[in-house]
Structure formats: structure tokens, C-alpha cells
Amino acid sequence: MKQQLARKLVPVIACLTFALALPLVLAAEDEIDPILQYYWKKAGETAVRLDPTQYNISYSYTARTLFQDVDGEGRKAITDSLVTDFYYTGGQLDSAKVRTGEEKLLKKLNLTVPKLFEDFYYLNFFPNDTGGEELDIGLITDSTAKAQPDGLVVIDRKNYHLRKLYLYYPNVPGHLRQTRSYRFTLQQGFVFPDSVWEVGVVEAVFGLEDYRIETGISDIKVTIPDRHDSSGLEPDTGRSN
Image (tube, rainbow, N blue to C red):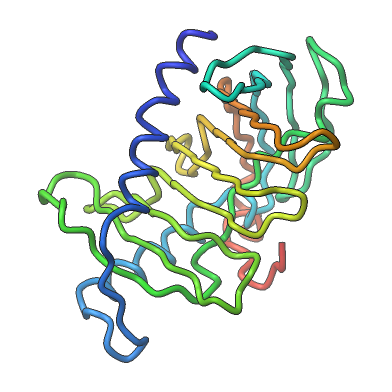
């Protein structure tokens, strides 16, 4: 597992670095390329429709996490590991059962997928688009929205669902910087993350500390209620979380 997570992490960081380094051509909201606006709208609608947290369903998955410290030369040292089974109903966490590792580590683990389509961003296509299965959309947040990230949204060009996210958060309390990256999978008609990476620099007592948290998600199981109960199959678009 350690080798698999390490291999996955390299392209994630490379893609995020490349995305943030590219020159961006930003436009005011009323000047957005109509094609870009079309894809963003479709992606937003699809994100709601395929979001398991928006439905009255139950689902569970297993998360295997490595916590790492990184020295000044980029060398990683695994400090802790955690295997946890998560159970949800109606988008709310019912329980988290730790199989291996210390339960206190759960406080460091954040697997929540940000709802990017609910916020305003300056959008742009990237010049490396080759017309393949994936479409990259760049995000730059307004300077007044301190909690929002910059980064890259990768969607399926044909079906519009999320495939990857590469996000940079410059204003996380206690952090000098933080990046969060996701890879997604389709399970029983819903989109779930199957990998989540968090890389950051925190302000510690004796200076700055670099860390990585790498999580692989597996054994995703979805339980859909009786199909005669239509309330469980319609997204709750009024939910605030």
C-alpha cells in the first residue's frame, strides 16, 4: 500500500504545480467563453445529481491513511497509519470505526469534497487541452473569498462528472500553505473519492513543519432505499452542508 500511495502522489503534485504555474487569461463573469460556461454549468448540475450526500441513502467505505513528516530535502518519514471504516446515512456521518491505528488521528483526517460549484470563481480553459476524455478547467478565486481555493477541476468531457481536483488553499489557519487533491470513481451511479492527498506546511513551536496525509478509499458500498420511496432518489438541493 505504501508504494502504491507514493506512486499516486507524484503525478498529483506534478499536475497541481503545472496548473498553478500556467499563465491564466481571466475574464469578467459576463465575458466567460460560452463553451466554458456550458461545461461549468453541466459539471455543476452533474455534481449535485451524482453527489451521494444529497440523497436519503446509506453508504460506507474503508479509508487507509498514511501520515508523513517531510524534511527540508523532501525526504518522507511515515509517522502513523490508520485504517477506518466510515458509515453514512443521508449525507451525515453515522460512525467511524478504527480498525488499526490510534483513534485520535481521525482529527487530522479530512475526506470532505468541497462543493466548488456553489461558489464564484474566475474560470479558464488550459492551453494543453487535447480533446481527450478529460477536460481541465482552471479556477482562480476572488481575493475577498479567503476560504476558497485556487486550482484545477478535471471533469469527464462526455458525461461531465468529476474525475480529479487539484486545489491550493493559501489561507488555512495555522498553515503557511496547503494543497488538497482528489481522484474520483463512479460507484452505483454516484461519485466518490477513491484517493485524497493533503500536503501542507504548518506553523509549529520550533518553526515550520511539512507534512503529507495520503488516503486510499476502497470497499465503497451503497444501500438505496425501496425505489417506491421517491424521497430517497431525489437530490436535496436545499441542504446547506
